[in-house]
Length: 295
Image (cartoon, rainbow, N blue to C red; front, top):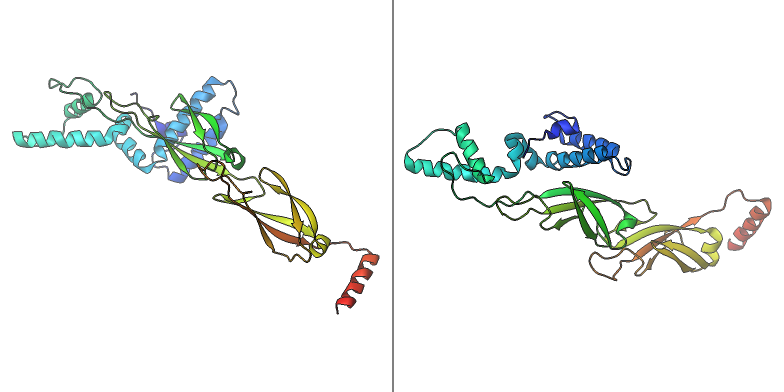
């Protein structure tokens, strides 16, 4: 594997903070995003490099391994184990001292299937690297189950996104990570969902919450009112003398329950009374008459 300078790709120094990495990634991702650069092969390649760099440097453990082992960072744990085994064997042979550059090359040669300068040996199978990706969606995108194609490490992967996925939730796609070494199993792909909400509804798991305006006359006298739900409108019967802050529950009109097909949460509506403004003299007179009747 050729060495790739992830710091250079993101345009940051090796001393960059996590916040610096996040800012640099977001800025470059917006600049080179395929939606903003249609049919631009160079921009698409750059976008993939930026995502790869972010996957490594935004993860503190992976970043530490990358800083220490460079192009071999995915196999840092295997190297340490191999190093310990080699040291253990040497202790029986009465050999002490640090590792030379030749020793280092021998260990990685065996790990990557190459021949050791000491005569080789059996090849050890290593599991591939796990990949991490972030998928940005709108709330309406996860109201129903749908399929989507992702590009991860230059590879197109078609996944099914279940209805009801939550913001920050992580799902695992088995076997879609890095390729195994010497016939070892592939790593896994972990997808984190970043879900923005531009609707009038507040979401709490499978339940939705909304505020509905009632004019004074509807609140006092009652009547019928059409209100929005997440996937359409419903008619509500407003009771006479409805008070401000009154809450009603619309059963089954909330958000889909994750991986429970056909099951939905509830929609909770809070009534907000809107008082009339710019009253005419006639209206003021009638209101005074009502006030006198009430007193």
